Length: 242
Image (tube, rainbow, N blue to C red; front, side, top):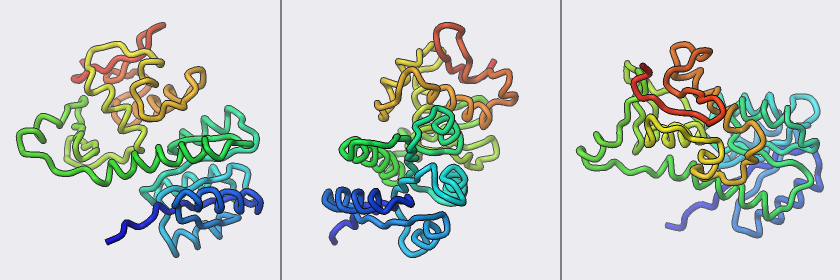
């Protein structure tokens, strides 16, 4: 059976952007749908569930940041924020809301394609994890304070076995820390260890995502014990939080 093409939904009110991305991504084998508003986005998702949404921040009416929150709360799909302004505040808020990546207009279509491919790989990797042998599975379940990181299933479980929702980048960061316990990692090291190597080491992407993780796994995120800040050096994962 022929594999279905990766589906991308372009949510942008500029028809020239819609046309350009439809032609460019379509020429690289993607199935592309377009929407010019939040309402049209919802209709498009109901008709054909996308793998990745390219979401313009500056939409009229319901803006892209509100729509990013809507998508992350309801769907397991990739979100790439697109901004005409490229302002840092938009980038930070977008990442806070769970976007997987961010790109500013005007952009090179080749760079956007690379970012789409990266996000798709992460989501396909998460969905395509196979169940390992029992011994290996036990070895790949890492304690995180009162939580358990199931590396092979790409899930974080609380003490009662309930899954804690994570974005793909949050999981990737947790795995990086969990596999390097009691070791200080600088921001540059963390960036080099992630699959998304297009992050700007001078922006706050790493710090924002670590702050979000702390709110999910720390008993008191204002006084972190599991993912600790080492002043002037970076971050360190302490498995038992002691």
